[in-house]
Image (cartoon, rainbow, N blue to C red):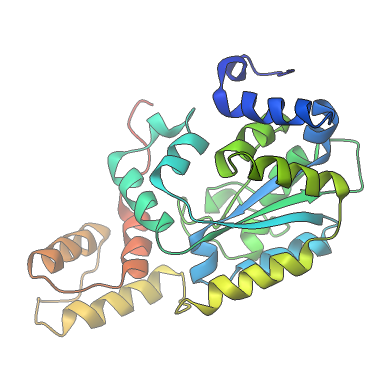
Length: 271
C-alpha cells in the first residue's frame, strides 16, 4: 500500500481498494495514475446534462472504461467530502442530502492517452472550479452551465490517492473487484454510459437549473395562494419558502434546491 497523503494511511476506503488491487495483482501506482473518476450528480440528471458531459469527455480525449449508476445517500456525501465537510454549514448539508435523493447519479471511470500527468489531475483541472465566478470557457462546468457553488453537476477526485479512496466509497466488494477488472481490460464503456443516462433521465421531468426559472416556478406555486408580493431579495425568497412550508403549500423540490443553494450560506465562518 503506497500513499502520498498521510491522511490515507489509516483510511478504510483507501485501504480496501489497495487490498483489492493487491489481490488481483494490479499495480497500485499505475492503476491510480492511469484512471480518473467522474461523478455526475442529480443536478446534472435533472437538467439533462449527463449526455453533454459524456460528449465533452470524448471531445477532450478522454476514454470511458467504466460506467455505473449509483444512488447517493447522506453517507456517501460524508465519506466523499470527509476531509472538508466540517467546513459546510448545516444548511448546505441539508440541501446536499435532498439533492442526492432526487435521482441516481452516474459514476464514470476514464482514461486519457497522455500519460505525462495522472488522469485525475488532468480531469480535475479540465472540470473547473466549484465557484461559478472562477470558471473559464474551456472548463466542463462552464460547458454544462453548472449554476451555483453547490449545484456544480460534476465531482472528480483531485489526485491518484483520491481515486483509490473514492472507488471503495462507491463500490463495495465484490463489485469493487469487478469494476477494477473492467478498467484493466479497458474496453470502451461509452455505450454503457449512454444507456445508463437514458435510463436515468427518461424517468425524470427535466427542468432548467437557472435561478430565474426556479423563482418563476416557485412563485407559480406560492403566489397563487395569495402570500403577498413576489419576493425580491434572497432573504425574502428564503422566507417565502418557510412560509410555504407552514401553509403546507407544495413547492417543486428541484426549484427549492436551486433557490436555497443560491441564497443559503455554504461555508461555516472561520472554517
